Image (cartoon, rainbow, N blue to C red; front, side):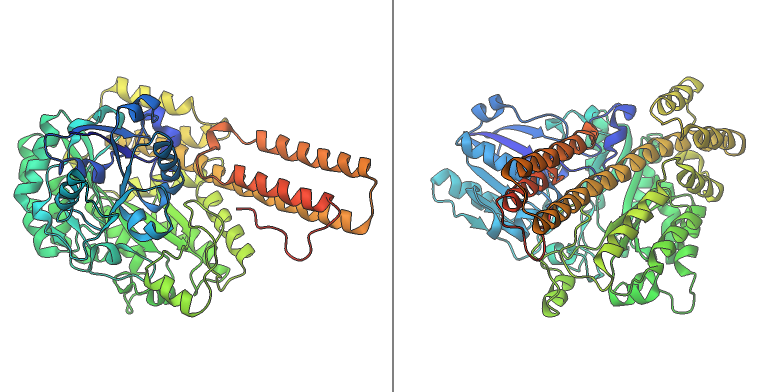
Length: 584
């Protein structure tokens, strides 16, 4: 049967990814490609499978020479890498079969794909393989129904080297009972949280344990508590499993803020080994939360509800990570300081702040389309460009966003370590969540981070480690892990600012050159000299961007190409009238 190559596209840098701390942690990627590993388990044994995760290893020509088929699964953020994969497979004449959230939403805009297997594939995948083997496969397979996830097979973790990853991943449920305006989860997976059985989850825990995994385990559910009845059935089983084996896994997940109203459930989560929960906080502005249809984040009788919610979860024993959004219709210029103040005061070290993006198919997309506010701009992760017209001045919004991330992850890391200390001062140090670590390992961790920090970051780091060692010695291993993440987050924030500043520099250069050529007629020799000087300045500025800050899809190469085309137009004697080309 066919040699089948499973290819997972590369992620761009994100706060989640820890790209700038991977070597410090001794790993290559944060999480394995769980979706693709699950699909791998749906192939009959007669298929010879090989998996290439581009976040871990490059795609080699010899892989494509071996392959008869290439299957890929991707999210929207992986689009630039996916495009390159499709191009290489097409050149090698290897048919591409694509699925996952990105193709499900954007397959009509994609080229070079032989077959699409869209939506959730548990009930369509065997039909597709049957048709493929008969030579009668359709181009598109869809499944509007939501499959029974108790039939989902055990992921094929044997196809990866688990040592390449910081954490393993499992999924308990799909779907979310809430319908936040900006979110596409309910459009993809529905508003009823469908769950696996406790027996299934134990089998998956066992499988990882038998393969030798010990350490972090992320339950990737978009809302782990979306089906309270079923999660209440699961947690005691997991708690017993963990206790019998000495708590080999430190668990984390995503949940809605109404978790805070489930005190008993939080207690069982702690017993089961959960030490971290990610909350979609979005904004401390109740009016903005109301407009985005996020009632679970609002308590009309308590203006301090979100702050108290974060603190209560911390005091139970779980670190809170938070997602935040800027660019909401209810945001004004006070939103920037409000976000900074909330993040600092609550002690959320890992705060993922982003600009609002209108995702195709969401309620937000539909509303903005009705209001004629959508822009013809590609959706990009980490972008400081917008795909809609915000109520706030766009320049003010982007500058405010950069100020927020530049403050919470400032160049000295003072603010970051302040948040870490606030967390550690409020975190209940549950013994089985914070196991003792050898002095040698602690010393190695501290020194490893010191070697990577800048001179201006060392004073804050030294004070931080000294205070934790004195006041919270049991939490020192956590403090070191947080420091490694802070190193990454500061570099990631700086990366985004530098890339944005470079693109703004291109625009300012074009504006200056256009105005100059409009006001005077230069001799060809003089014009040619001006053009060469402009290109020299641009290339010098481009080379000044650290190589580690470049990534597939950063838009720099495309922006330079746009700049050169516009420059050619200007120096051909036809200055650009009106708006200059937008540099992505």
